[in-house]
Length: 245
Image (cartoon, rainbow, N blue to C red; front, top):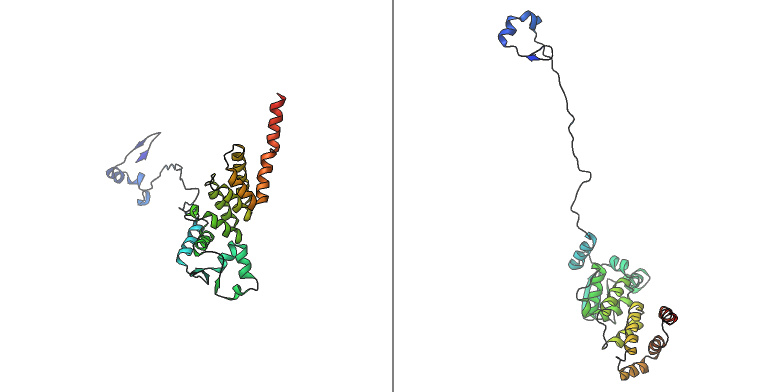
């Protein structure tokens, strides 16, 4: 193909050979090209994408809890033995940490006994220590609150209080108030106290039940009576505003 002025035309082999002096000097064919290169856009991902499961650590510790692989301590509770890992118990509970870290017999033994707790409750304690959750919590929340307080598992204590608050009614209110006070569960104590105060003011509380409660737990009964007699500051403010209008 030969280029003319602003145009191209083709040359056949016959013409090339016939005009060899012109097109094939020294028997060499020289071909010239006009080459235009266009930039092409290449799209590359900005991030390497992986399907990373959420809460992988919780999943892994749940597997460890179920398999008991690498356990290095046996905890005897009643007639039941539980396999566990010292390092995990130390990391999760200040009380257990002190037990295994200081110069105590538990530090030296591979098998220890824990009194004053039932196997059923301790199993739930271990489940929470490893997995951060408790199956069947509502059925055992009162006993588990006591265990959480004993082993200083504050987050477990919190979810027990939440569970118990959702079961609060006139039948169990006094019992829950006593339980919350005994284990320094302040949010549950205040929630239960407010519930009782409202129902005392509405005469929904049986006077005999209150008198029995007062005999056994005079300080808590006094707390209720004070709240009934003296409104909170915000209540006082609202009363003042209402009377000034």
